[in-house]
Image (tube, rainbow over all chains, first blue to last red; front, side, top):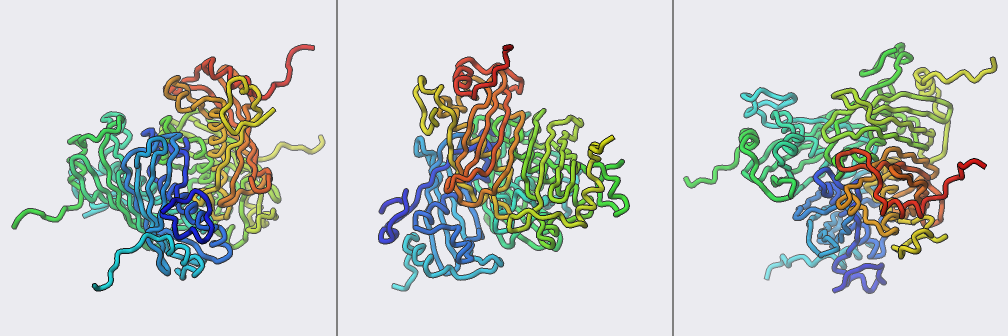
Length: 159
Length: 159
Length: 159
Length: 159
């Protein structure tokens, strides 16, 4: 199990357990409590998500333009454990928690890069939609990639 | 049971079930899918929260300055049902879901004002902290107000 | 000369000298200096601009959708004189400084509503573009309205 | 004349003509026209500014904390020539245009990294302030660094 800092050859994709993207907290992202404003974590989750799928060899821009395939947020959840501060480098560790025909779930951990402290965790659930806003199937070419790296689901079959 | 569009006299506070605040979706808040970017809902929740406590006669600015009392977000959750679009007026309906000594929970419903359609629901959990970032007790004067309007909790006592 | 707080009848349009829109500074808009982050003024200018043209009877959404007419920012300038702070109500006073076939200029003054103090001034210059990003003529129906309220230009004719 | 991608030894500081920082356009930063919303350029200018002074061996966080020295924006100006789009990598080229006892001016060029196209240019003027919001002198240790890299001013002396 490795993590992806670079785009991998296709044969390696199934080995990505997670992807780490980094962001540096901008002054614009702080608030008057002197910490990063909480809504920004959802923006950083998006950065993590996009970089994860880029590491899998997929450009989200192309998904939108060439396949009319938008990964629309249906649910977002974030738990804040420790504040992020101005100028700190954060590591956004992103996993595909689940990938189904019409739904993709991502999970996130946000670490302060300097000391590895876990600052926040979260999950987002997405529905695949066309430009018209209607749900659609995730094209097979993406689905196979997403499923190959999705966290294994608990076996629900009868013994 | 009434909703508060105005600050109420103290004797009426306990009758507020929720508070409606309105925002109009700004161009800056849209994204290239042509809808309001999902992280903005957390910002609108904050608007709803501040306006609810203002309706209860409390200025959040004063809580921060005079009582060194910050309502820090510990958990935020949003479910998106329908997109908000540019220039639409949204009604953010906010309730205090729970108020305890050190923790306050708010719940939110976001409606499109024009047709009353429910666009999103959410909850945030907050810890009371000082400027030093350490948790502290919510001062009694605020607690009594918050508790008076908090949704009744299910009875957990023995029969 | 009056200012518009409401949409006016068509015969009154030419009498609008400016339009005042109000915004309340959000927590999300503050930074760790304890004041409103400077980039937000451009967002508030946009609010002022949209509300001015709404007061003139024009929905910007319709300009975009029905006339494929986007008012694209080509230049933005802001001078900051005094800080805006959290929860303050700001009055964004917007004027059409100049309206030509392909270009519209707006000017702004941002006042703190509580004491009328001038916090910032600014100007934006806009080019009319289609969805394709190409400049186009501002349709006559908009141009006549914009010109009727544009600040009179200095007479450049020969004496 | 070189540009700084790294922190330099002190003897090299005077040789920095500009500093290039890169940002990738986030989905959150796009608007419904399908391009980066114009106010974000001021945020990117701030990224460029902070990275330039970091390249000069100065941490802005320390300027604020240890020297109570805030670089407050007094004037911001941006000219938009070409749109930046989602996921594009932008190069923010930042220069110190002028450095005086109480005022620092920065200038910016924003390039699309893929083809080197110039998308926008801008300037910001800053006043040095304490936490109390009052103007103060830029401490000598910073001033010498800033002046050493500031663009040469035209000679205003008598002939």
